[in-house]
Image (cartoon, rainbow, N blue to C red; front, top):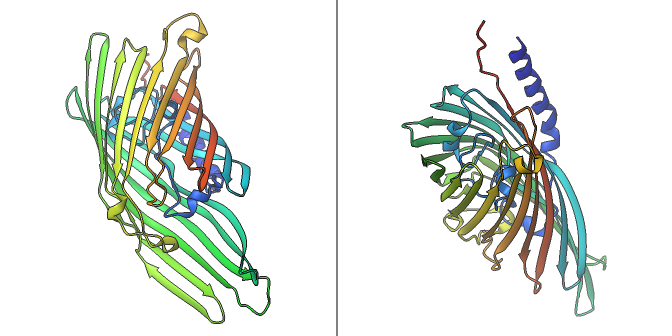
Length: 406
């Protein structure tokens, strides 16, 4: 009975957190392009390692980015992961600098075995993209007409996922995720003149998504004494989103334009690997490529997209998992990644460095993780963004499936 009560309480917490999750968690001007800021959906422990994950297989970490990894969890353990973050951002261009702070729930995920160590399931709620910007520009035409341009947007796309992983042998795992994507993105722009004799223009668009996509994963893994090696790959095919796109324009005459299924998410593939020595030192790398140039995207009248490459590298160290000194049992992580923007006009790659710590509880499998990420994108010539993000999560591992003998 207690087990079912835990499930009910867990589901109630998730439902109560849904309104918080739907709130906007960015204020970046770069989110005005395309679908906004795209999230790679990496767990917080792996964010501290440069956002690796494709080649990671860990008993205490849920990795929704790699569906083949779910069978890497303990066969008797239920896992639940909840993360939240605070983001401090500094924007700068020729007109000056501006500071902004945001905070939000990052993700919710759970994982448990279905059949011993051979079959496992994971599910959760993740962000796919975020939009949030408010830009105002003032200028004049030959000093005769003074005008103000305003650009505003908010919203984002979220996704509920369910994934299944199966071990074919003692060294091969296959997995697949299905995502239900939902959410609304609102963009508006206006041009107004100080001179009342000149008519301005206001355009507002709303993009509403209700669609499904899939991801497949593969992992090869083996242990040689104190040495453990994991190689992984993931793949997604290009998919047209089921969506409604409405544009309303107001000048002297009001016009409304409506379209459906006008946006696609790209085909992608990723490969990664990790090496672990004596359950203490882990070194990992990832490479992924997203074929955005092969997709159609009509949001904001902007379809100049390009392929996105991402390179990630990370290290985790734990001096002694059973040591008496608490610092010996802690997880120490560091990483970095470099990624192209999928927006063609942004030619400078984004880069990010990260550091993190894992704080295990003494008498439980639960670990609290804290990650600090510093990132930079854009250039000083046009617009640049520097940010610092603190993410904290609780990875709760409980032995729900152990049968006590009388």
